[in-house]
Image (tube, rainbow, N blue to C red; front, top):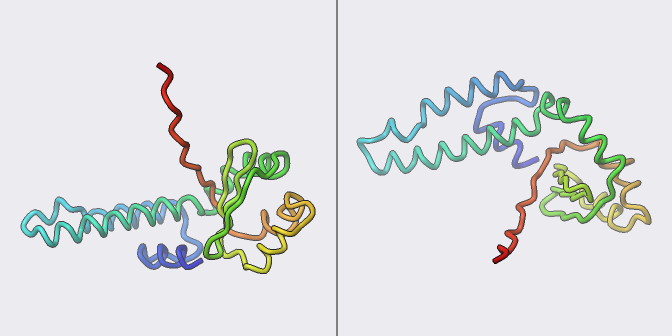
Length: 153
């Protein structure tokens, strides 16, 4: 949740911000902080580059967890969570990442550590996740970085 709150604060949006509002705010902030506006000072240009990177990152992240985005991808998400087994998972700072056998990966935010421990110790982690995780937390699709395969010569 910390990451979500930081990004919302950076863009100045609330929890219920719609995609069109996010897009408008993003465009206005990028107009204000675009590095090309700061050609006179190297220091200001560098600051604008860093600020614009953070704005872009925040925008893409908030779009990925927006209700409209989740609704648009709900059928694929439901198919994955109901038919595909869990390949692996990782937990860091209350973010649970679950990788599915179909290649999909999702991040779940603000998952309490005691719930994660129950998930790990559950006799059927997939069933536990369907009951206690999938519909209970803000999530987003998370693409794993694919390992580069060696070229065939």
